Image (tube, rainbow, N blue to C red; front, side, top):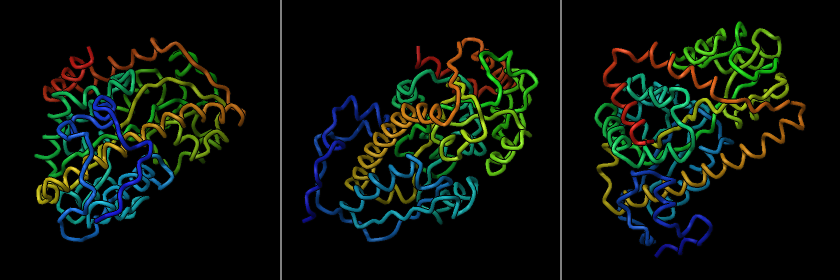
Length: 344
């Protein structure tokens, strides 16, 4: 018999909180607890490919919650490969699809290279709260997305991590899109991110993240956008004067497992993985929320001025992005309309 799992703040959870944190992927689980004996499955290591570092809340949630929960209850071992050790996004996705890699965590942008409609998840101001993200995940749109990922990529999503609101930084004060006209902002090299800046009247400059700090330091660029934890870890507060809280995008990342492997698991092992994912999502989201609260004060202490602008003028870029990139794309528009309907 396995020693009993110690009860902690990730122990008993209500059905409502459980579903809010993990989405419909775990809706079928019994929430009264799971058997604490090791499940009958062959011992093996599961390779998990990642692009980001171990210090990020997404990875901490895997290493501190998901991994021990699974390893306490099965003969499976989670081996994390952070910092793109197994390849870039596309290489890891293809590796999981083929079965050479077992697990991965990916957002809409890299997955949209294979399933184009998923890009609507990153349209600016689609999400106005974190709760909205999980409301969609629990409903028919979430079910459709999971089935699309399964059919197109031979992966099954176990849960969805919040990655944190994207915010602007700049060396000039920005109170409205009018203040951005003519300024050069680094853009993530995707059509949606580039179009978002165009809709604000700025000049987007697609650039690899590794080049960004130096470009800001030398004033080759005026600004950039990223979630607060990324702004902190990259130390952009050293080279940017203003933090502008625009909340223009809410990136999220699916916890993915090779579907052939998933279907080979007995039911009790699947239950362990889904429960582990639910707890990891909840832990990650708590960490992100706490960091978003505390980092603003840290940035102020580092000399940044924090601007909280009226968001209505910024939201107008949404219409620009949709008209430019999604007209004539019925599958993408159908998915977007499903999201909008779920949020009414």
